[in-house]
Image (cartoon, rainbow, N blue to C red):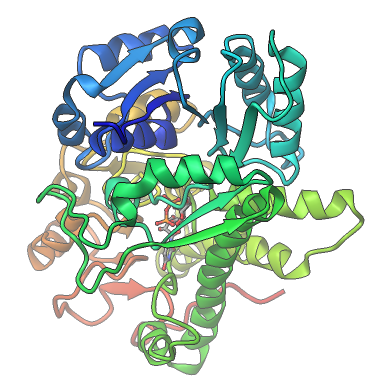
Amino acid sequence: DTRALQVAVVGTGYVGLGTAIMLAYLGHHVVGLDVDENKVAMLRRGQLPIYEPHLDQLMLDSGDRLRWTTSYAEAIPDADVIFICVGTPPLPSGQPNLSYVADAAQSIAGHLNGKLQVVVNKSTVPIGTGDWVARMLEEHAPDYHEGRYLVVSNPEFLREGTAMHDSLYPDRIVLGSDSPVGIAQLVRLYEPLLDQSFEAPGYVPRPAGYTRPELVTTSLSSAEMIKYAANAFLALKISFANEIAGLCEWVDADIAEVTRGIGHDQRIGPRFLEAGAGWGGSCFGKDTSALISIGREYGYDMPILAAAVEINRRQRQLVITKLQQHLHRLKGKRVAVLGMAFKPNTDDLRDSPAHDCIARLGELGVQVVAHDPIAMPRAREEWRHLRYHEAASAEAALHGADAAIIMTEWNEYRQLDWAGALRRMRNPLVIDTRRVITAALPVGTVEQIGKRAPGVLVHEASA
Ligand code: UDX
C-alpha cells in the first residue's frame, strides 16, 4: 500500500499501545518502543501489559505490521512519523514530570536520518513543551537541517475501557503545528479514519449516527492547551454535578432526574454529569493540578478549577460520612467495598476513589473486604500499603458484612441478585455511589449519592 507510512511509537502505556495498535490496524507499519525490557518481551509474546477491551484482537488483526523493540536505533531511522507517548506523572508540586519526554526526545534525536521526519507529541505536556522538544531535536540530532524535523502536537482524548472505540471513532482529531508540512503528513496518517465510510472491525461497533471526525488544525500551543482544557472541563462538569447532588439531598430532589432534565439542553449536553464518589483516573487529577500550576507560574489564579478539585476531595469523604451516619462507630465493623478500579472495564487503579475509601476505612479500624472483577491482581501489587481482605466474588464480599459500598459500576454488580445478597449481609445497607442498583429493595437498605434516603438525611456538615 503506497499510502502506508512507517511509524515509531515511543512508550507503551495506555496511549502508546492504543496508538501503535490502532495505526497498525489502519495499515501502517508500526514499531512500538519501550525501554522496559519485560514489557517488550511480553508484547513480543503477544501478551498485553494492560487490560483494555479489543486491544488483543486488534493486535492479532494487525499481523506483521506491528513490531516491538527496546532499541531506538531499530525504530527511529526508518520512521516517517515518530510518536512520543511516554508518561508525564505528577511531581509533588502538581507539575508534570517531563524527564521521560526529555529522555525520549534526546534518544530520538540521536537516530534521526536527516530526511523529513515528523515528531508527534501525544503525551499530555505543559504548553510550550512542543517547542522545547523541537529545540532538543535541533541540539541532539547529528545532522540537523532547518525544517527537517517537524514537531506536531496531536493530543489524545481516549477514555480507558473504551480506548479502541474512542481511537477508531473519534469526535475530532486535533493537529497542532507551526508547520503545514507536518500537519499534512499526519492527515495522511489518519486518512482512513477521516473517510466517512470507514468501518472498524465488527467487535468495535460504529456508534449510531456517527459522522467522520472533525479535523481541527491549530498552532502547537493551542493544541497543547486543548488537551488540558478538555480534561479540565470534563472534570468541572462532574464536580458541578456532585455539588448540585449534595444540595439535592437537602431539598429532597434527585440528581439523576435533575441532570436528565438539564442534559437535554444541547448547550449543556447529557454526558459527564453523573454524580458519584468523585472522579479519578490518570488524567483528571493530574491535568487539573497541572493547569492550576501553569497558571501559578504566571501569577494567574484559576478559581473555578481549584473549586472543582476541592469538591472532588470533599466528595470522596462523603461516602465515609454516609457510612458513619448509619453505623455510628465504624471500628470493628466489616464493610464490603465493591469495585477498586477508577472506573469499569479497566484494571487501572491510578487515583481511584476506591483507594481513598479503603485507606480511610482502614484508619477508622474497619475490616475491609474488597472485590473487583479485574483489578484485584493489580491492587495486590500497587496497594500493598492498604489493609483489606480480598473476596473471591461480590457475593462473598457481601456475606456477613455490616455495610457495602459500590465504588465502580461494573456490569457484574448491576446483575447481582441484590435482594438475596442483602439477606446474607449482617446488616443490610448498601451505599451505591454509582446508581448500580435498580431493583426495588426494602426501604432504608440502599442509599445513593444525590438522592435523599427515606427517613435519613445525610450530608457532610458544611464548613
Ligand atoms: C479521561 C478523558 O475522558 C479522556 O478524554 C482523556 O483522554 C483521559 O482522561 P479516563 O480517565 O480514561 O478519560 O476516564 P473517564 O471516562 O473520563 O472517567 C474519569 C473519571 O470520572 C472516572 O473516575 C469516572 O468514574 C468519573 N466520572 C465520569 C464521573 O464520576 N461521572 C461522569 O459522569 C463521568
